Image 1 (cartoon, rainbow, N blue to C red):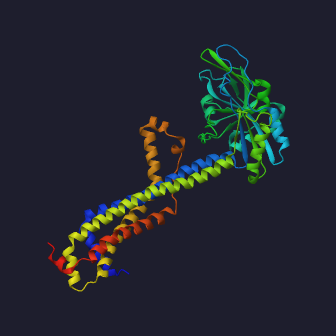
Image 2: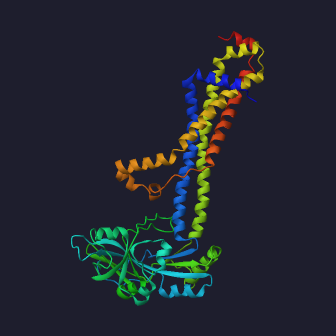
Image 3: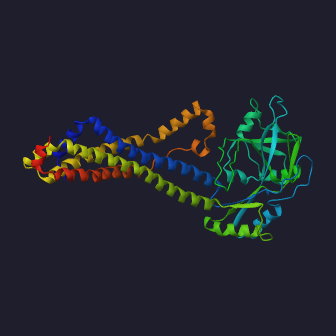
Length: 448
């Protein structure tokens, strides 16, 4: 359609006004880069959110105990706490009555102060004491760095042993090997022998209103049977001369289903079983990671579409810039158009000439935008590093999903953005080209 000679003349005409051509290319370049960058950022955030949900297990159903808002326990003076949440009897009921259940994992969490009696210079550290079974490590993807995790023998014999998180080990034992040392619970005057230290694990962000954020850096894991025997079901938290009491048997049970296809139906059975005596029960919450994952995938597609549409607006603005520049060019080159028509040039030749110029501008802008788009991951990571280094307070307030996000380039965004840029350039170049071709040669020659 366009001969080599036409392309040469078009590019030569553009180079006569480099500043104008450069600004026009800039509009297309920004649009193309915006499409690639926005889709990469959305994909990175979405992937991080899906990873957090997947870490819960697509074949799992999580039931959490929730303290009712009207149950404040005691404050200032002792007052009997009202029991709430999941019970061990309900745990056994779920384990034995629902046929699609593969296993049920009980968990109990308490906030405690941990210390090492052999190092009085280290102050007690607030952390989370977790009573669990050996399967807890697999479900939450905990990895052992030294020693071992809890065993079924520890659970059956109610052993006085514990496994501690990596950060807590470094804080309490900065120069000692924690294995076989005694971990001290300050308030209970209780000791546990350390049998394992875990590898570092990143905290999980809150997932909507379904699950709160979890920080694993100060955790201590003990057999759940040991927790029941030594600490009981009543938890007393002291603070500033007052204390709060709460009574619950289990913080959470994780129901593992035999097949992902059974998850929705099993979740309904679990909820109906737990609420059979009280349909309006408010002290439990059933969370289905499979449903959250499907919602996250749908949300990802919505954000990709919205991000693409927003970025496409930049391309349209760039196309309008091309049309404005070409209309101005038509006016400036009126005499040139008249001379070419007088020498036998056809209207189709004039249209092709101007379309070549708009297409060339679009291609240059598109290619530049694609090249800059490739730098998205490096640029975003560099920017986050800069913020972390020079504005640590601002970085600390940023959501975890942004701090841990890695932009992921979407392969389809490159041909999509480049193709749209060329199409936009051609579409917005048609009107100026037709206007130039329709000029009367005699009037064009008279133009000053």
